[in-house]
Length: 68
Image (cartoon, rainbow, N blue to C red; front, side, top):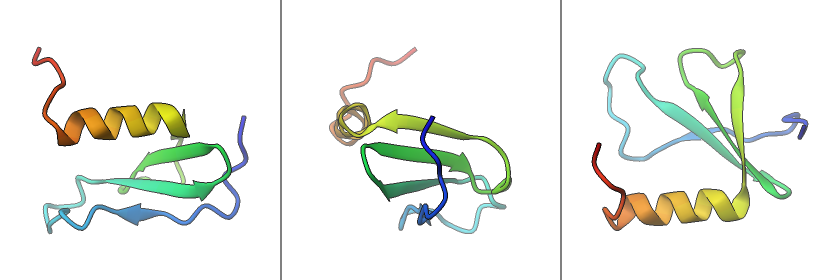
């Protein structure tokens, strides 16, 4: 498991003042992108390989994810 020491967390520039319902992303770590709940910064973080994160964000931006 990748150590998240040194992770630089950021919220989307599109995040508004919506009561803290945001996620934070750290993409400065070698080979991994970490995602966590902004309300629980000491809690768990999901870890994705960089290529998986790129595929996911590309699909979101292009609206090509299937609706369920």
